Length: 99
Length: 159
Image (cartoon, rainbow over all chains, first blue to last red; front, side, top):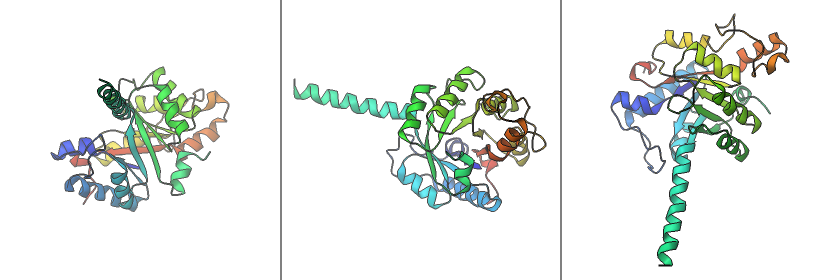
């Protein structure tokens, strides 16, 4: 199975890598999309399947449509950070309401 | 439960998170919550690709019923061997740029005659020798996912 690695690839191509935190609805740079499609074609040609990385569900759906079968979505550190920030925000809102 | 390879072969879409923290607890949560697959990173994480820390993470994944794909820091045979002997069902092969590099790295994921993986039956993946060696060798040669990562302009397939 071929694995598409967008972050280092974006750095090598000199284009934005997308958003690790999944808050950006925009997918990836056109150069990355072209590279993804080349990987999808090669994987299909050789019958080996394609795995990829998605910043969010929208990105994952788009990559599935283009041939991805296995998708990395979510990173423990990011999940912890985002949920911790949400808890803190709730706590601060509670403190403000009771000040 | 069908293997990761079997689910891929039948066309399932598989989605799962990456473990960077190095915590078996987090990995158990990922498994119990119902993700299809887990990616364990050692390239950008504090986890060593060689020792018992990685073994504990793979064991936690197995306990929670989630197949583990491991990313060693480099696609070197020794690091690949460790992850596979611990029980990884797939290996991310980092920074592959040429067909020759891919061939060497993929060969490290397969036992002879299909590849060059070093052989010993008393590993966690081989159930410490309880599974007959020939059965085990043929099964993992068929099922282990060798996954070259395309992450440089040079590595992009012909467009």
